[in-house]
View: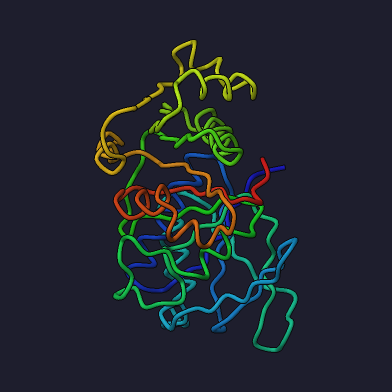
Length: 274
């Protein structure tokens, strides 16, 4: 089945940049882009374990008479065929149901707060809800369009870290980009992490030199983040009990999404492989 990405279009300069980021991701990963131009302030997403109401800020409904024209122009300029999602089901007359059978979704850091109030280190609660419940990974783009030419996967040994590495390897294969594994070790040895990789049949490409493994045991985590290239797509698994709390307050995720100005692809606890 062909991969597809859902993008909710915002007819603003910031929205243009985000759409350009989705287009770039789709071209790099051979993914079909589906654009939803909202006509209402809310929509529903029915996930397996939870129904989420997504509240949009007013910028998503700005200048509806030019929204499709602008989106088509941006997409065609990148030599892609525009594909638009028109909701078929409505829970209420102004509450459309948006399908969740996508391979990826692109979300700005917040979709329910004005962009002027959103700092680099803040991921809005609605976006966190999507990450928590979606079977697909969520692309958190940079505020301004930025290309990525390599992939960095954060690996801390958890089940979600294993899934994130598999996801990164899939993107590596289809995009032709190099992949770097980033591990900031605490008290455990490299042998411990290697065993996890071997148990999951993920060590071969590292041993063959096809994947670089940056294993750091010294220095502070936030300082070691400087070693992540500025043009890297960061792939990370959101893990732990109570994902929302982990995403905001967990030391690893908090520092990554606060410090790094990179595009991030986040696989939540319900993510299933493509």
